[in-house]
Image 1 (cartoon, rainbow, N blue to C red):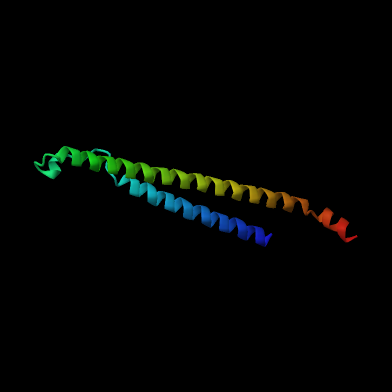
Image 2: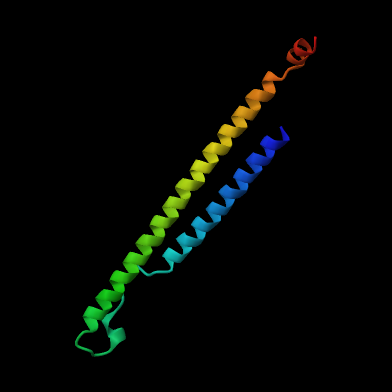
Length: 108
């Protein structure tokens, strides 16, 4: 069963790494403001409102992309967790099948 334990440990490490990266991407997405860019930041330029609108669009898109990446990684995290649970279940069931009675019957 040592090999199985190693497999579940590797799966757990992978799941944790994916969770950490999801958190990083979520944090990066949160850094983009949702409040909007004031046109005054561009001074009195005639195109100040257009420029502010473009900055807003980029920020919304970046936030959306980082959020989407975070959601995908959270899905991967859950999938790895499901595989880990399944492997543990199979290991537990196999261990229950290796009873002293079963071993005696095969030895005799």
